[in-house]
Amino acid sequence: MTFPGPIAETALPGRSSRPGSVLWAAVCFWLAALLLIAQVPQVVYDLATVAGPTREAGALTSASPAEVRNEIGGARIFDIVVLVVLVVLAGSLVLAALRFGAGSDRARVIGIVVACAVLLCCGGAMVGSVVGGRQPDASEFQRQVTQLQEAHTPAWAGWLAVAALAVYPLLLTGMVLLLVAPSRRYFRPFSGYYVYPLPSQD
Image (cartoon, rainbow, N blue to C red; front, top):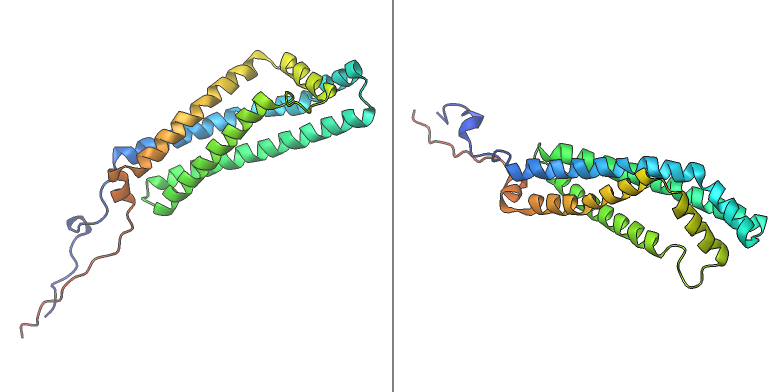
């Protein structure tokens, strides 16, 4: 006669209950994803209106038609790439956070990697917006394009850019919450149970 039968799962020392740190990490990731998506209208606005300030800058600086066309084409390609990156990163954050509740350690690793990628992209975009058009080797045409684009930027786009700064503390907080001890225990892969057989008692 062996062990009399399976014991209830609730009686086995399995995965711990989901700690609050995991829930709040997911909330931080969802809010960061929402802020990324909130930048889409600004990018779409830039995509739709970039031609006007660029042509105006070309007229003011006597830039050639080819220079104006190249500037408009390059700006539109850049905006499309930014749109794709925003959607992909935001979607990855949301999907990873949805899997946190299931205790998926793979989702936690993917979430941290995506969060680092978001922070790098946002940091690069911030540096680019500060430096863009002001580099020493920029032509007068390029500097004029930057100035006119800034002059034509609506107020709501500026507020969206300010709100996007919250992505940094949200993702940093989320990553820390995923790495604290309660979260590590929760995401620790479960290796299964070992039941010792009882000697037969014939």
